[in-house]
Image 1: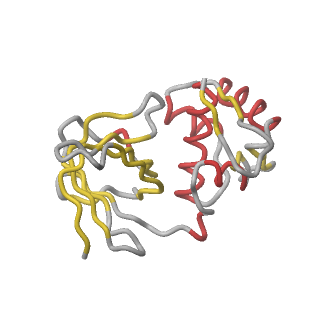
Image 2: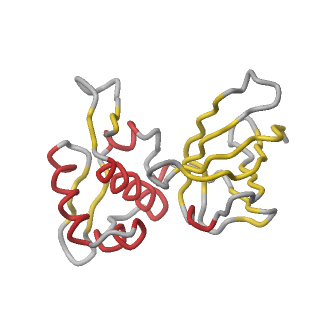
Length: 180
């Protein structure tokens, strides 16, 4: 069970792991393409059938986290509330923060959030990177570089060690931090 917290909501929102996985994949695809996402596309990316995704979307709609868009080009969109909770901007306002794997750019990938841990420790600095695009192409030991960040020019480089339990965040042991 996951809890999403928003300063604008009256209390935390409790989600199952399945709901969180569906919601994060919806937000990632919506952020990347800026248009409604079909349940089938989400299901293919997370390894679940479209019916399961549709069922999860109904409960996420009731929580005010997802909107349905009717019509042949329709699908689902995350609400503004969801984007705020996940720390994401609407796609039209987003800035690309490039991601490199072993020196090569990762197509259609952008970092949308970085959570750092243990930055005070001289030999251990880790980061969780929420990334749009092809997160399933990374393998343990890959050298990951992200940045430069739009305002600070910061660039992070480290070794990929895995993903979080939902498979939506990259875990990276940071080895270098520099600015342009």
